[in-house]
Each structure stands twice: as structure tokens, then as C-alpha cells.
Image 1 (cartoon, one colour):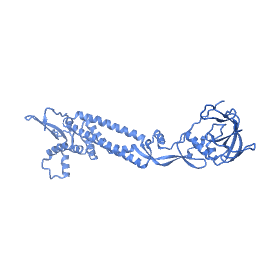
Image 2: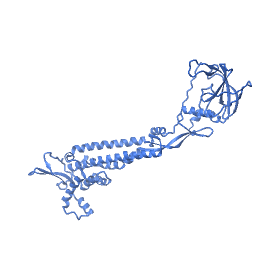
Image 3: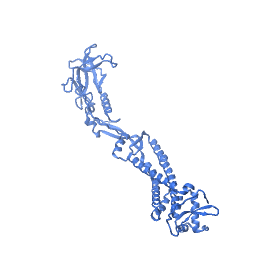
Image 4: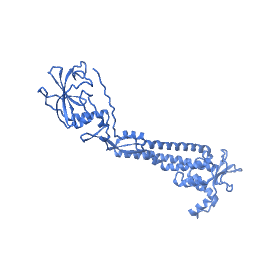
Length: 442
């Protein structure tokens, strides 16, 4: 017996967020398309999104702000050690390191003050980092989000809409089988020889109802009955000779087969017994069910299944939470570049700054003492009557500040001070400050 194999290419239709997201990801869509949690409630989606914002967004911002503070004050130390810097910039960076209030002074320093190339680039990075801190939480939010879920609905040929799962080969077959099972075959049939029978419709093949009527109770020959739609309105009842295969040793027991050899190009062996009106044929005929012999048990009408107008993706009551693939790649790249440059700059400052190595980080009170000394040198001790505007005006007149070391030879002590360079209008003292571990400083 020649075996004929029919192969069909099935398209897959899927409405779930994850399935649509995978296609969006390949097309470059900026939507949420890396799904982490699917089919969750609105409350759960909100809680997850809030947790991401607070733990990741705000948490990372706090860590980045601390790193920036240490880096900025380190750059301030190094610049004041090697060169000079305005009192306004010193106070802005020391007291408002990661705030927008410091950005104006940093920008003014980049534009107007005479700095070495490295120091100028360091201040440029400080300005970039202030903007980075401002938007880092927004960037974290852009990476994630939640979207309403969708369910798959199929439009049947008779206009009925039915919620289904993903439409693939298995689902397609099951849908047709359900439609076939919804139709009840006739229970009383008059055969062409005028014999009335009551078939037992307990068998099926490919979702098609089948019944076998043996010639006699003990006979291995009989008649096989099955239904097949003639058109969208009529169901045909066919019959064909059949025989019983005992299948010795087969756990599934005996099985009825149609008689004779059959090949695709053989003439039809089944005969039409009768036909009758059947509403189910509107669906079955368009879906593409066929008889049992001329084609495989189920041959889909691919014209119907490939028509996207017959499918609907409708909102469901569930939500999905995940990442935007494109935004995640973009923002992760930005974060990685920022972290790398910041780490390298921080390492350079730690290795080059004498004060960071031997005096420790510049904190609030250390900065207060240092800047107060510089202001006192300019204004004297009697400053209680100055208004804020007057102080701003007077401090703006102070020459750029630099750290210097004064040695007191008789006592063996050294004095660290922040003040003007003491070299007239020189704004670029080219020197590298050195602290001696053997000297006690005050």
C-alpha cells in the first residue's frame, strides 16, 4: 500500500504580549518587548513598577550621587593643589556638589578660568555628571513599564467570535474538531437498499464522525459511514465498504479500515447515501474539512486561516511587565560609559591628589574651615555686618584660590592654607604640591 504524505505550512497567530513583543524587538520598536511578568493583575504590575522605580531608579541615583560627590570634591582638591580656582566655584562644588546650583559655577569655570587641559575636561565631566544624575531615574523608568494583555479571538465563517489560544497547527485542528463535534449526526438512516439502521457514532477520524455497521454480529466486514459537507449549507452522508483488522497483541484492540487499496489518484470509493441541511457546514466547509479518503483526514482551507481579518487581538483583564529592548540597550550603554569614565577619573584623582592620600576626602566642615580662612584673609575678622549681596560682591573680587604649604622651620611645623596664590594676578601656578610625611601640619 502506497503511503502518501501531505505537508502544509501553518502560520502561527499569537496575541500574547510576549509573542508580539518578540516581533517588535526585531523591528526596532521602542515599546515594552522583553516580558518578565505576564498575566498579572493591574495592582501587581503597579507594585512591580513602583519597586523598580524606588529600588533600582532611586537607589542607583543615590549611589551615583555619592560617587559624584567624592569625585567632584576630589577634582576640587586636585585642581586647587595644582592650579587655582575661584572662591565661587570652590564653595559651589564643596557645598552643592551634585546639585543644579553648582552647574552654573562649573560652566563658568570651564568657560572663563585658565585651567590645564585635564582639569578643564574634568570639570566638563562634572557638568555632564550633574545632568546625568538629573535624568538617571527617568532613564530607569524608560527601560521598563507595564502594558495591558491581549487575548486571541477568531471570527468563525458564520460571524461568531470565539476566544482561542495561539493559532497553530494543533489549535487549528482542535477548533475544527470542536465545530464538528457540535453537530450531531442523524440517528436513524435508511440505506440505498431500503434497510433502516441506527448507527453508533462512537468513532472519529480527524474530527469527522464515523460509524461502522457490521454485516452481521460476528462478521469482520461491514459498512463505514461518515459525514462530509457538500457546500456551506448541505451535509452529505457517505458510506464505504470496511473490514475489521483484529490487530493481535495491539493494546488498542481491533480497528475498522475502509476496504481496498486507495491512492490520491484513485476514483472515489465512497458513495453518497443522502444529504441534508446543516448549519455547521457554514463553518466546516470554509474551514476546509474534507472526506476521509480523497485527502488526509483534515485538510485546512489556508485561505481562511491566513486572512488576518479573521483574527482579533482584544484587551484582556491582565497586564504584563517588562523591559523595552531598544531603550535597555541604549541606556545600559550610556550607564556603562558613564561608570567607566567616572571610575577612571576617580582613580586618577585618588592617585594624584596629595590631600586625598594624606588628608582624606574633602568634607563639609573641612571645606568650611578652608574657605573661611581664604575669605577672612580678604575681608578680615569683622564681617558680621555684611549682607549676602555685599559678601557676594566682595568674594567675587578674591583672586583665584590655591592650596599652599608654609613651613615653620623653628618649630618643625607646616601650615596648610587655602588662599590666593600670592603671585599677583597669576592664575596658573604651575606646580605640584607635595606633603611630607615627616612634617606635622597644622
